[in-house]
Length: 420
Image 1 (cartoon, rainbow, N blue to C red):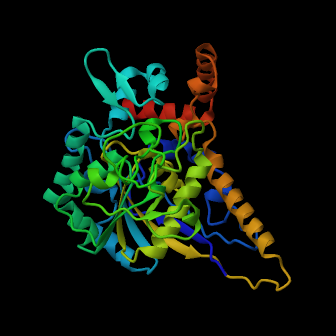
Image 2 (image 1 turned 45 degrees about the vertical axis):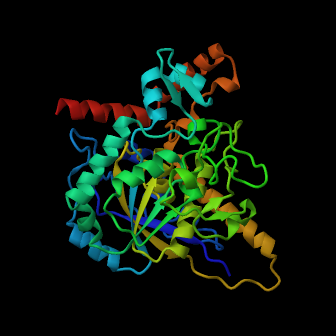
C-alpha cells in the first residue's frame, strides 16, 4: 500500500521575514498548532509541526549573505539535529544569480517587460540584443555566484554547514541555474549530481522559463519540437559536465531524478502554472528526493518561485530569496499511519479520497495568503485583454491589495523598523 509523505521543516534558523511576522495572524488556526488541516480524514494523516519561518539570509552589502546563514544555533548543534533522525535532510536551496530576464524586468519596468517576456529576444534599439529564451546569467549574476562561492568554499562555510557529510546536488535544467552551479559549487565535490525537471521555475508563457532540449537542435535522428525559440546548443553540449537522464513524459509517476523528454514537454505558450500546481510539483520532487537520495545533505540550485513553493510544501512561509542567496532548511519525512483497507473497498475510490485530502491540505496551506502575490504568475497579462483593460485590472488589484489587513500590517512593521 502506498504511503503518503509529509515533509516538515524544523526551526534552527532565524525567523526575520517581514512577511512571516506580518501575516502570522492571518494564517488559519489549523496551521498554527499541531493539529492537521486534514486530521479528520481517516485515509490521510498529516503530521505538521508549528515552527517559525526560517529566513535564511538577508541581502546585505558585500557578499549579500546573512552571517551564519540565519542559524540561531551553532551549526554543530544543527548537524547533530540532522543526524538525530534517519529520515531527515538538510536542504541548501540556492537561487540562481541575476539572469538577463531579471535585469530586463528591473530595467524596463512592468509594462514594457510584460510586453516582451513571451518573446525570444529583446532589442534595446541601442545595439544590444538580449536573449530572453532560457535566459542566461548577466555579468552581475556571474559575480553574485562567484561571491557566494567565496563564502562557501573560500570562507569554509560549506564545510561548516555540512560537516563534510556526503552531499547530493540537484539542478534545475534551465541555463541560469546550470551556469550558477558551475560557479557557486566550484571546489565542491558532491557525492552525486542530478539535473531534475521538477525544480524548474514557474511553467508556461514566459520564454525565459522554457528549457532547451538535451540534444542539439539538429542532433536527433527524428525531428522533435525545439521549444518556442531557436538555439544553437542543447544542454548536453552547453554543459557537458552534467549528466542528463531522460524519461518518457508518460513515466512521470514512477521515476528517479531526470528530465521528462529530450525536449521541453512542460512549458506551454498559452497557460501559466498556478501556485497550487507548483506546490504539488514541489511535493513530487520531495517524494523523489526521499526515495532516491540517501545523502543527508542536498544542495538544490533553483529559482525564486520554486523556492517559495518548496517552503509552502513543508508549511513554511513563502519567502522569496534574492539572486544567489542560500536558504537552508531541515526537512523531515513523516509517514502517515497505515490503515487496514476493506477488501471490498474500491482502490480507485481510495485514491480519489487521498487526492481530495491532499487538495484540502493544499487549500489550507494557501488560505493564509489571500491578497498576496506568491508568484509573479498571478499578475494580469497582455494576452488576456487590451492594454487599457490590463491597466484597470492592475489598478483594481493594487487597490484591493493595499486594503488587505496583512498588507497593512506589513506596512506598519516596515515603518516601525525604519523608526527604530
